[in-house]
Length: 571
Image 1 (cartoon, rainbow, N blue to C red):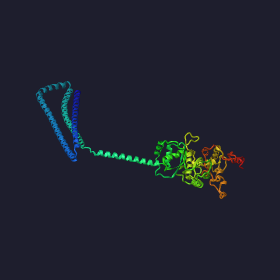
Image 2: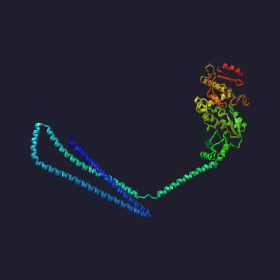
Image 3: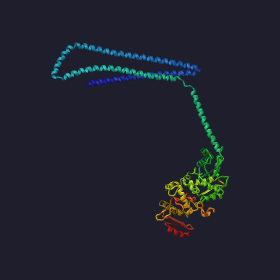
Image 4: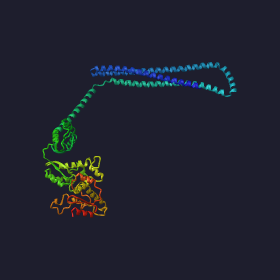
């Protein structure tokens, strides 16, 4: 049984192998035919294209193309008819072969049956004898073997019939697959033929050239437009003749200068200005200072003015010391013919500068203040023009305040650069509160070391606000700071108050009358006073006073303070 099953499996495998080889040969033949057809088609197409190019009139071209298309259609029809005839012939031959096989099998069966009839008589006797012996000896075992022998014969006949049926089925499947493949290939070939016959017109090349020329002209126009704008900016053509004041900082390079000029509206082409300065070897050597420039000046004039500090106006240099208030600032500016004091003070009350300087927008109680800008005009040495615009004068002060307190700088106690504004917020105070406290320190302290102790007295008193002015020594009324410098603000002393109001004058800044800080700063403090406001000494002092020579006395209680007043010669 096992040998016969193995033989059957091998026969099946061989049949499959042969069938696959037949399929491969068919596909190879189809591919070769396809290649030959494509070669022939390509040659025809080349010759047709050459003929069409040589033709001059479009009518000849159209008639020729019509004729070629008709020929192609006829050829394709003939090709498909031949193919169908050949397929039918193959199919008929296969059917005849199958019928012949079946007829041969039937004849073989008839011959075997005839031979079997002759030997039936002998075999019947032999079978009877054998059956009797086997029944006696083996009883039922050998009968099973005979039955299995018959079943094997029956299976063989059945398998042969199934093989024949499978071969017919596989043949028809192969035929159908071959027809589908050929039909698909023929459709592709026909499409390629039709597409290749169509000739690309020369109009596409012309359109491409036209588009390319238009693109180049657009680029040329844009470059020319930019060059014209840059030239007008370089020569100051069509620009406004209004004068603008600018400040050139120390060690300014061409990038910084170009940005300042662009931000102020003096130039429009920052990049072109830098190129001009580099090409003319003027990218270095800008002199620190304040300049009045106009947009109608050309680049060379602007550079010459900023490098030589040329000006048509007289320049005044003024040093403003720490602790001066705005009335004193106004008097100094007026004495030096920079601007009128009245107009200066009116500008210091206004909101004209809030848009440019964000730190001024943060002031909340501007209605309670005499001068909104008090404390924000940083004390330093400045250069001004005589009869300068008042707004430009104030901007110079505010720009310096912004550089010193808002922008990053090196500050004591911090490794990295930071700003006074950031440090004040880090300590839980606003910048306006720090400037307010610093103005009190600046007005009261005798020297640098005294500033930090005065700062501690102010902070200690401010802490009693939460206890209604009660301190740890059980003394009341300490939420009022009691700073002498606040009594006559905005005037410096009683002697500077106008005679017509001195008898009735009362200041809303007077810290003997109000609790906590005054509505705003009382002067313009320097950097040391600001540092002291940020970092007060850790003391328990609630009182201080100074002698006429500037000697300082500090006290924790009122009794000690009264004794200090006698020592200082104030009582």
